[in-house]
Image (tube, rainbow, N blue to C red; front, side, top):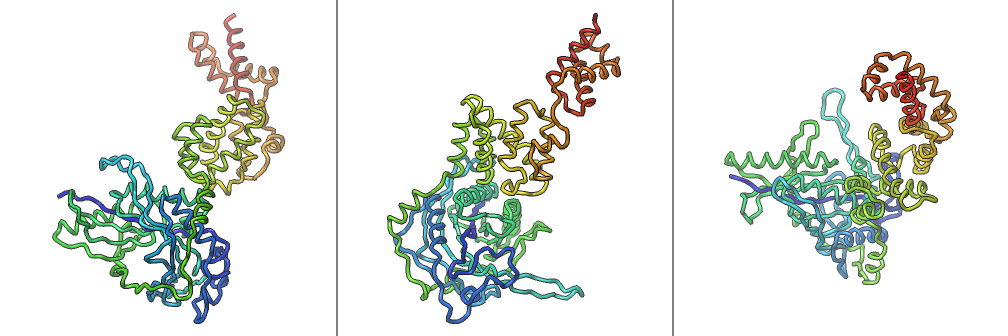
Length: 498
């Protein structure tokens, strides 16, 4: 029997606000000592009263608007009760039946392997809650069970949850949807969305059903998967596992499973709760939110240019290919870097040369600079080579000071030291040689040292001239002006004919 995969994703996004969701403690907890940016509210002490973070509410509504959601006139916060060690007060302030955004969608390309093209994936809701504390486990060096500690720094950080409808039909479509959301929250500026820091986390609900059936199968939930690759692998494994269970005559159990990266398997953690298990009821310490239409209109007008619109503009205004534009708008930081470098590079340029400049800047960012950043697993926002620095380097190519190969060497030195291109060229003596007499001496040396190449050229093998030009470049340590070097080699070989 053939089966259809049904996937829904719950994406948790830590919002980039200055303070926590219901208190004035700083939300930037990553580098703080354990249990330091805390107060009676985020510690869950009796009698502490929460106060709503307005900016977190606005960020959530902005995200909802960007996801084509409707914003209701009223919203409220609820108590979600559960007794885990990372929730000291025994409940989480969240939203249940009246969230901040409802009924939106995300457009993805679809998975061609299952016959899908451009698809619209429904977004059921976007709601706001507080993050919980973080459990840290320490093994016992003597082989025992070890022990766990609770770090409360994360507790109370604004956490936005985006819940999709069960519209995804393969791990590939889930990956597309997830990367689209990741890009969207970055371009909105509501979150850094660094998965390695836990700012962007995903729970996946997955089930299978016979092809053609309209009835949903029993679903399992895979918790807190922390990379795009892991989400894809976990879903692939879980789909195959459920098929094996069904085909062997068993039944899939509704449960929460965890992804074990080292073994590339999902493992059972606990039975899956239903909504009534959490005993939701309205948060008595917080008033309902009356969302005025003027507020929504103001937030709608404040939305920045998102990745799809920016990609289209890069193609239309800068003449970039769809492939390059897609890579440049993969993150907001890369798109901002490109436009910052280009704005400096294009001073006093004509429209025609400006288009050439855009392609040149894009090539350097997507090529050599990306290679260096990827080696260090570093984001472009933390690049030692600034947009101004890259523009200065390209200016040295344009005025003939550097060849392309020398510029690559200078870029690597800029990346390593954070230095200025012109200063590095002067300090290392890397300027391109355009003095005819100096290159002629290298040409004479190359011709004298390679009689076979000379004979090949005289026999009509014109590529031998290119070989000799390479020898000139080696002799001059790559500093000879290439076009001039080739012309002088050809003139020297012509003299050999006579």
